[in-house]
Amino acid sequence: MKSKSIFFALSYLYTPNLPDGTIGVHSPNLDKTYLVDSMGWGNIWVYGMDIILGGYITRGEFRQKAHHLPAGSHTFQYPRTRTENLALPFHQLHPLIELFSKAQKWQGRSKMK
Image (cartoon, rainbow, N blue to C red):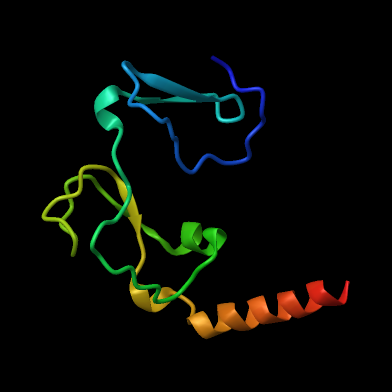
């Protein structure tokens, strides 16, 4: 099945039922197809845990500053990672007060229009 929509970015895939087989997502711009087999689907909900927002960074800054973390690396959360990742030290995030200030300014401008 082909989507009729054009996407700028794809953050996640959702289906109400687990697929019986492999799902492929093709990007004509990248000329690349990503395959998700039936065992690759997982629940990303976080149950019974606290999520602490400790800072922010733009996607562009993250791409510039993050370093490669190979599959099998030890991290704080896991003895070994299963996939390649990008990592960034916490201290390189911007303080949340900056984000909140920008949001308040944006909200003030949008009310004036």
